[in-house]
Image (tube, rainbow, N blue to C red; front, side, top):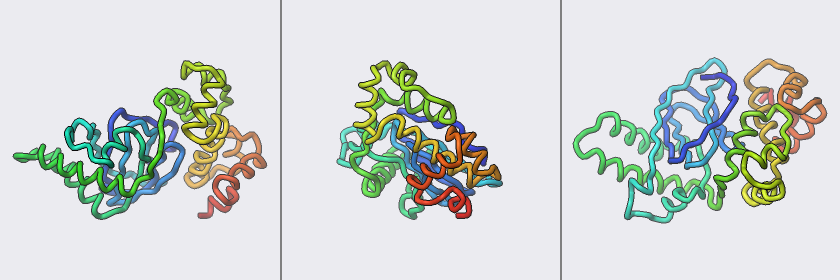
Length: 244
């Protein structure tokens, strides 16, 4: 739907999807990707993500979750191993080859013709190979930090204290900062600030709320703070972003 994103989720398995109609955005690990009819998404295990249609639009998707390491046991080529280890990022692509393969995989699962399991294995191998070629290397994830990241995703507009995040991850504050910097290249506070800017950017495009209302609703406190952080992360003022 076009309801504003309020939360993100993750799977312990790979998720692939195909967009049959509509357009919108994929938000994953604090990054924004756009999609349209014919787009495919590829979300490795552990990526916090969700989809949202553009205002006034309802998008139709079909998804499959799978464990490619088990599905292709004995065939752990390099690209598959990277995805099995959570070393690649999510993506939303308008790529004819990738979309066609994912659509055929979904159709095979829905129709279940004779020998479809072997067909699906071959299709998944091709999909993961293409995704590995297009994806980013050295994207690291630490499952121990998921409770902190998930909490920030759900409560980004509220004051969030470091002790609360550390407690949720069952680690000390110093360990949390160290692990967070190793994973994300930034502190939890910097990650939260980036998340707030990303969510504020969505609100500016998808609502008629004033910049002041957005600043207050997303935890910035003032227009000045929002504008400063928005320019740093998005490269333009909130008003310019809203105009497209």
